[in-house]
Image (cartoon, rainbow, N blue to C red; front, top):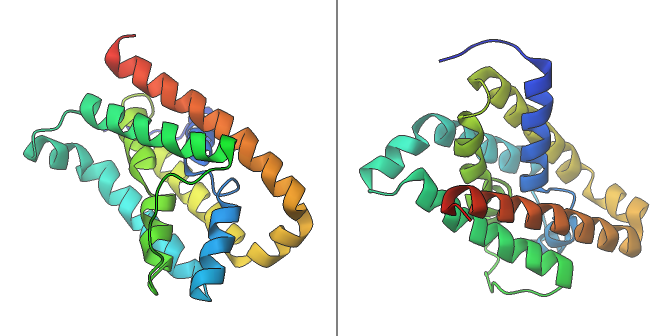
Length: 190
């Protein structure tokens, strides 16, 4: 394992994860979730999503090997899911019909909204490009951003307004769409 500290790698990995996690673009979804369940536990959601990402970073490939799925298969599946999420964000439609349980801070917020298939696929993909310290720091920085957003959800909603949230959702939807296409092309050879 490579344990060097590289600020450029940290920034690149942080930005890639930030775009995939897309906590800013998810603000409307998180607000809706809060309205349905009454409360979002920011520390719990942040801690659980951090744990999922760290565990998957170190044992994700082993888990995939045990069940006979290649990183390419997982990445293609993840790219399709990212594509669907991006499609929902850009067009303002909802394809999935998930229910919102009382444990919403863990499911669906920590997993799969924050640490979902796209994030986990991205972690495995960037592991081949960046050193492990850069990725861990990038995960930590993104979880801090997630925590701050969740903790200040009401303020952010008031600050951005409906129009600002809609614009951010579209912009991050296009970024996610580009990431989905890049992942799909990388692992299909198209």
